[in-house]
Image 1 (cartoon, one colour):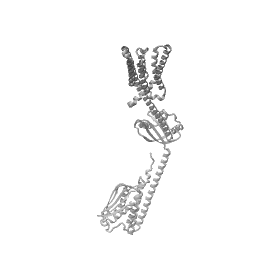
Image 2 (cartoon, helix red, strand yellow):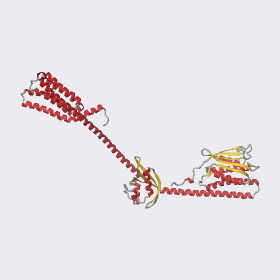
Image 3 (cartoon, one colour):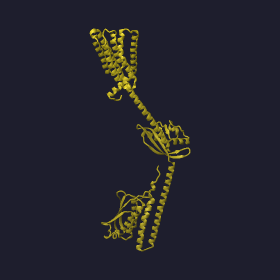
Image 4 (cartoon, helix red, strand yellow):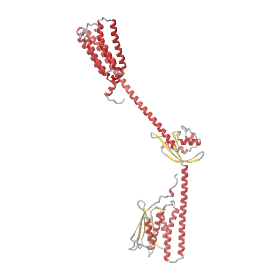
Amino acid sequence: MSKVPKNDLNREFLQFYLSSSLPLMKVGLIITLALFILFAVFNRVMYPGLPETKFYLRFGLIGPFIVTAVVAIYIPALKRFLSTIFIVLNLTTCGVIFYVGQSATLSQPGYQHYSSWVMLVIIGFFTFHRLRFRTLTVIGALMVLSYTLATIINGTLAGNSYAFHSNLFFVIAVYSLGFFMAFTIEKLNWKNFIHKRTLSENYKKLLAETRERKDAVEALRSSEHQYHQTLDSIPDWIYVLDKEMKFVMLNSFLEEEHLRQGFPINCIGKKINKVYPYIPATTLDEINHVFKTGEILIGEQQLFLRDRTIYGETRKVPIFRDNEVIQVMIIMRNRSKEKEIEELKQKNIDQKETLLREIHHRVKNNLAIVVSLLNLQLRNNSDPELRRIIRDIEMRIRSMALIHEHLYRSDNLDRIPLDSYLRSLASIIMGTFSGHKVNLITDLDPAEVSIETALPLGLITNELLTNAFKYAFPIQHQGEITIRLRKGEGDSLTLTVTDNGIGLPENFNMETQTSLGMFIIRLLVEQLDAKIVHRNDHGTSFTMQFRNLIPNTNFSQHTPQS
């Protein structure tokens, strides 16, 4: 039972105690009133001249109080004042008891029945009225006191002490009987009240739980309806299995496919291997794996249907309840068209790669033809200045041809391994100046750059290395040239060409140099948005910093997903 303040509980009990006694009180008071009337009429008719009759009629003074009590019970507006009304009426009855007793005498005919009348009033009071026990005790005691005072005043105690004490004993005995009867009735009603209150609270809780359960069932039904509607609206094949590998639901798209392929439509409760006899064992193993681990499995599956073959993407999704996998949802999406598109894309990419490789190969061959033509011209001309110019042009062409050679052989058609390219270029230049006793050192960090970056870098490196071989060692033709490539922060790279030769003239200025080589270097550095500085310290050093800009287009990365 819920916690209720004591005063509220007592007030609630009094209301219950009084309400439960009203039917009995109505009947008892009406019967008592009827008996009083019948008794008075009987004596009036049968014994009109007896003096006892006049005394008996005095007892009728209690009649109006009984009538008032009955009327109060029948008026709904007075219901909340019934306890007060009954207390006032019974206190007035004490006055009637006193009045009837004190106005009589011991020798008056009928007086011997006065104590019996008082006992009937007392026992009726305890029987019919459902007031609080202490209230009943006090009013009953006042009735006994009224009787005692009346019998003392009318001379019963002085005239007949035995009759006084004997009658008083019976009045007190009846009061005691009413006392214990009222106590027992209240205790029984208290237990009944507590029991009914507990039942009422439990009933209310049961009603609340029933309503909550009904609401929960309704919400669950609505949720399941929305759940099925949602799954039916998805244009994939979806079905749900329980732990026994039995179908729990199929969405409408899968049911339509079942109808089209001749599979059973009413699959709920049937095992999957009965519906799909040729289902791969690997699929069943994957479903069992999801039940055991709760993992989501994504894969691909090729289905051979009656009218066509499709490529599907499958997802096996666990459905949890209380942290346990109770069902697995299998979602299959037809990706046949997507696969065809991906295969077509891959075919186009392969064709583009083949075409680009062929282009790079032909450009390299064409540049090689140009070099061959220059060599023929070189053989037929003895002018040293012209021979030098042709050699320079040949080296520049070779540096460009080498780029196309790397692209032709590379896996990525839009990227060139700069370290490998510079190493090959340095080797070609070293072979051109094979008569010089110069040691060429390469110290290159791995890096990939686009052709837009590699081409000017190759030409710049060609000019710097060629100038170093030509002018850094004019006497002994001995020395050391170092080419370094270093990665910096982010996408920055640093290229350094150093020699330990005679160094540059003191008044050397790259911005004012008019030679073709320096002009090409300045032009290409500007094209790369780079910075180049030179230093004279036991030789010559050129250092260039630039950014590695990789283009977004990358044919090799556009491969279909498996």
